[in-house]
Image 1: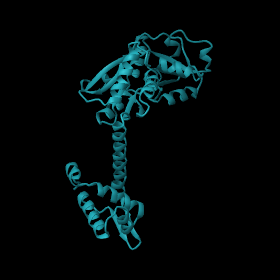
Image 2 (image 1 turned 90 degrees about the horizontal axis):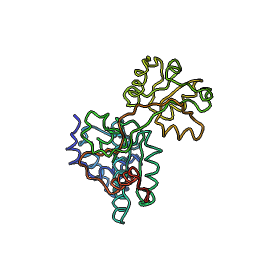
Image 3 (image 1 turned 120 degrees about the vertical axis):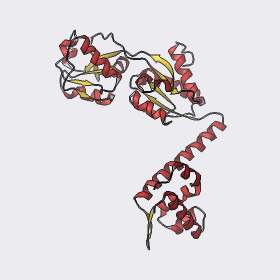
Image 4 (image 1 turned 135 degrees about the horizontal axis):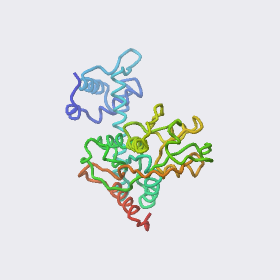
Amino acid sequence: MITSIDAILRRLRGNHIALLIALDDHGSLRKAAQQVSLSQPATTKSLREIEALFGAELFSRSPRGIVANELGRCVIRHARALRSEISALRDELAAIMRGGGGTLAIGAVMGSMPVWLTPVLKSLREVQPDVSVEVWEDNSARLLSMLDQRLLDLVIGRPSVSVHPDAYDFVPLEIEEVCLIVEGRDPLMRKPPTKLADLADNPWIVPQATLPMRSLLEQLFDDAQLPFPRYAIETSSTFATVSLLRSGAGTVGLMPLKVAQYFAEFGLVGILPLQIERRGAPYGIATRRGATLSQPVQRFIDLCKMKRDGDTGHL
């Protein structure tokens, strides 16, 4: 029977973590004992405690040394991750005590990258250069799941896609425009279509069924009383969309307008001049409702609000 989380937290000690890593590094009880500054009998006793804690043998013993089995390799992998997290905690505390530092883990939907994330992080770097930043790009649903698990500090996305949208504090930033795109040198750019019906039979790269942009595209086809493309390629990846546009002349995709403009500057995509009036739900900054925000998180949110409200004096 696997030991409960509470029992592991009560009984697992720091020297257990150090010992597991030392055993993996050296494959020897004697050498591991030297590394963790314990006698060999004390090391043997600690290893028995660890195996009793997890209810299984974690190492195979032989005259040539000690080797982790499958369970042991699993425990060691997580022991190293714990040590890394403690190291990061120590570094962050030291930075905060020096009057700065901290970490910021951000999740962002594709459309927010060139418009919000890049300029605001540039501003944050100018005012707090010692903040460590981690960025994840994905769709809102997956990013909100990471926020729920406390893997992210904030998400620039759409809480409306969540099954529990009220679980988040939300700062709206923008209602996104979208556009239809082709590969930058596609013949359609020389003689662009004037209506969606002209593209109905073309190859399509479309957002996956669970994404808000997919619903918007389906609405566009409904508005035009057209069937949705039957054999479209579905992807949530920006890079895959840009790459797949090259799969054949006339291949069409859907993309946030400001992202498409970014790629169009480099000739990677062409924006078709079909006006799309429909808009999706606004995206913005989501944090866990009522959560205490660290100084870097609050500073990032403040900078986003300044940009949204047109106060660029500090951006």
